[in-house]
Length: 258
Image (cartoon, rainbow, N blue to C red; front, side, top):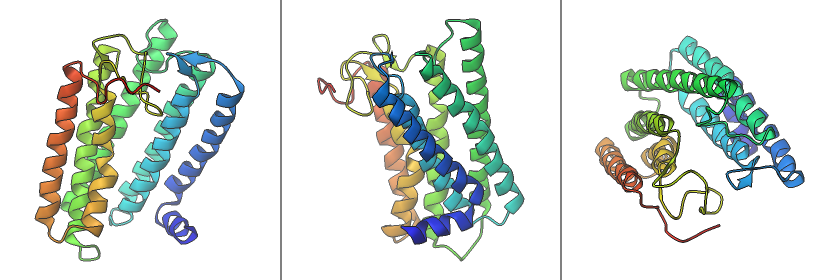
């Protein structure tokens, strides 16, 4: 593990350090979750910040690892600092709203809340569009330093990530992630995905984690690039099916309440 972290730091110190900052914030939020009773939508207010911080660690360290393969060091540096700025802003709002016992997303109950939610949407749009550009650089990359299957895994992992990141706008336009009922109510343990109604977060989650799963398949399992392409196509279809299921108002797993 120490060798892995040392290698990660050498690949991209900026995103490496941001990841550790998020780990520290997770620990603080965990203490707050245990010591306060403030709730949002029926669960402890600090659960959401913890989950967002954890996903940011995974995202930062994933992109830090991949981008070391790109020769455009200036573009990588600019992207890395963009991620730092945007996620400190986003996570700061999520944590601050949690401390107030208020929603950070889909909250337009006051002018201030509406402005913050709008700014978060703009920030995440910039991030997703810029990530698409990094994906474009990988599609242009011609290298023999990594295997073709791994390279195709990175390319298609980023592509699927971007597609299903933009799927988040479905939730933003509805001011809700639940289909068929208001947000809240019974949900799965940890994720809190609805066990009664459709939940758009399911496809959002699985689609975005193609960023890790497809490259891992390309690195460890695939023998030819077409294997990665086929898996990516199947993965896209399956996650799209999850999206259609949610839009039909059906839960991923019914009656398995936390």
